[in-house]
Every structure is written in C-alpha cells, then in structure tokens.
Image (cartoon, rainbow, N blue to C red; front, side, top):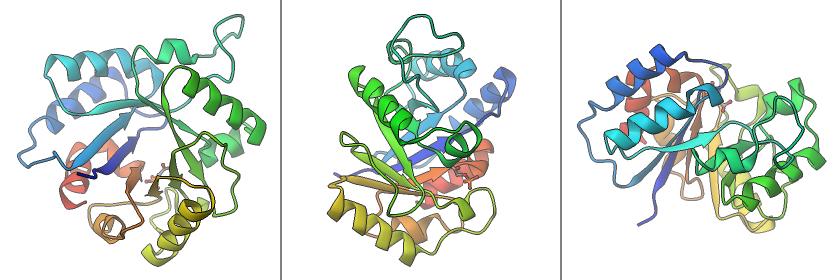
Length: 219
Ligand code: PGA
C-alpha cells in the first residue's frame, strides 16, 4: 500500500522541554496511521531525545534532519556530517528556500549535500521552489514549496501543485512529490487527495501537537 507522507519541519524551534511535551501529546493519538509515513525533522539538538523517546515507546514516527554537511567527517567546525546523522535519522531536508536565501546554498552545494546523504543511506527530501528548480540526479523524493506560500497562510492552489508534481514526475523521473507551504488541518486533504501528490511538508502547524495530529488525521 502506498503511504501518504506527513513531514514535520520544526525549523529553528523547540527546546527539549517543549519537544517532550509535544511527543507526549502526540502519543495519545487514537486513529489508525498505518497508511501514513510520519516523519519529524527536529533541530540537531533534539535528535537524541526524540530518537530515545520514539524507540522507548515503540512509536511509529521516523526521524529526519534539517541539514547535512556537504563534507565528510573531518576539520569542518560546526558541521554535522552524514555518518553522524545516520545514527539518528533516515531522512534529511535539502534545498529548503530558507537555506538557499539565508545561507547562500547554491546548486553545487545542494548536490554535494544530496551525495553525502546518499553515501550514508539517508534519503534526501529535496525542496524545489518551482518546476524549473534544478534537481540533483540521485534524488527520489521532492517537496514542492513555493516561496510565497511558506509561513504566509497563503498556500498554493492544489491545481498548481498538481501541475508541478506532474511535471517533475515526468521530466525528472521523481517517484515521490510532496507539497509544502501553509499546510493546515483544513487544507491538507485538498493536496493529499491529488493523485500525483504523495504527501505534505508542514512547518508552522507542525509545532503544535494538536494541529499536527489533525493534519495526520485529515490527510
Ligand atoms: P509552513 O512551512 O508550513 O510554515 O508554511 C513549510 C516549510 O517551510 O517547510
């Protein structure tokens, strides 16, 4: 059975206490999730706590990172590399517009990050901003995230998202396309019911356990 991806991107938010409260709230869910692939992408500082909590409670959520070093281990002060991440995560977000804009990440760096993730068997969730964004060759999962829709409360239309998803599936041979940008419990179904859209990447709404649960339920 094909699963619908629901990915939480916490960005630079959450302390250990806040994350712990979130996990406790979310583990009270009461509905079937076997048809959903739920992935939470916390900041690096929370990877240990989250992995421990999830494995202790045998909870069906997978973990992703929000970044990976373009370099392997070595003298790269401040970087977290793929080998280190592999101890905690199965996924990593690469190419988010916030990193392209605020940290000047260009196509070359993004390609190196994708390669480093693949080297350590971490699946990159590669963000594209429109249908013409360059996608590195080994990418399998893409998230279409138009900049105007991120954190603005103004999502793209499901029709536009469908067009982009169709285009990248046909032209870049991508298997899985997610939509991201102002996804809420109210609008999530409009995206996930589109046959070419395989799930959603959720920023702001994923910080609130009840909202995220409602998104999972309604997707
Ligand atoms: P948003 O962010 O849901 O807050 O719009 C999405 C994202 O940037 O991944």
